[in-house]
Amino acid sequence: MVVDRRRGLLLRLALVALVVVLASGGVWLLNATSAPQAGPVTTEIPALQVQPAPVQPGAVAPAAAADSVPQATAGVAPLVAWANQVSRRTGIPARALRSYGNAELVLRSTTPGCRLSWATLAGIGRIESNHGQYGGARLGDDGRPTKPIIGVPLDGSAGVKHISDTDGGRYDGDATLDRAVGPMQFIPSTWAKWASDGDGDGRGDPQQIDDAALAAARYLCVGGRDMGSPAGWWAGVLSYNNSVSYGQKVFGLADAYAKQGRS
Image 1: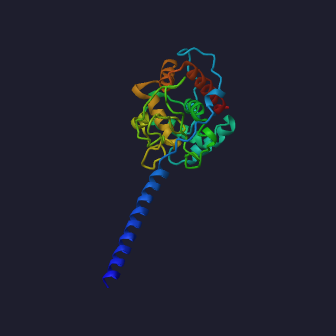
Image 2: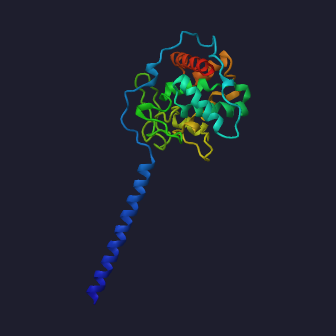
Image 3: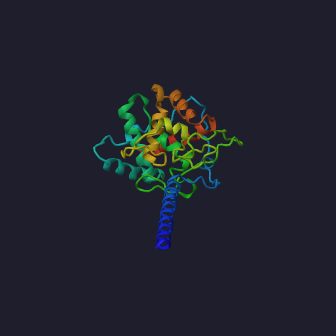
């Protein structure tokens, strides 16, 4: 009897230990699958495919395109129809255009003096992630890429700033160095300040293009900046990336997109 009780106790202890191990493994799996994987660095760099426009910083702003986005905000249908039409003219994925157009509409309502155009957001989106298609990703209808868009480690190598980890790997999967994340390539610490909810789901996700585009729009319009003026436009874009070549590339794209979108 004593032997049986001892065996029973050992069996129960073994079962408890097994449950604890499985539970711990379940928590680890949840955390592991919830955090993005930094992964290998892709050789695809969208900006390398774009030529700088022959313009001097501050001399001129891209063509205006604000009036092409539908004013109606009661539902997504007008914006979807507009995005589908402009997509055929520009080659920009319609789902990405919806996010750029939505961000312009929001800022037109909240910060009308900024005069931010969807075309400028599209120029930045093309340079940063090829409109959410970086590294072979594609945007789903929910506005999220089929795989997380995570940039190169910011390790101080040629052409790259050195930025130590600021988010514990929460957004970029790298607990040593920061990496830019999402379709608009936000550094984690910048996202923490400008996180926005563009799709109305109650949270900000840098990988979700509606959220990312709205955050980029708010960032560009900070401090009463007028993105419709040459000085304001260049100041905003160069605050995003302080490189004349970068600004010239965004200019050329934004100018072309605006003109194509109006035709």
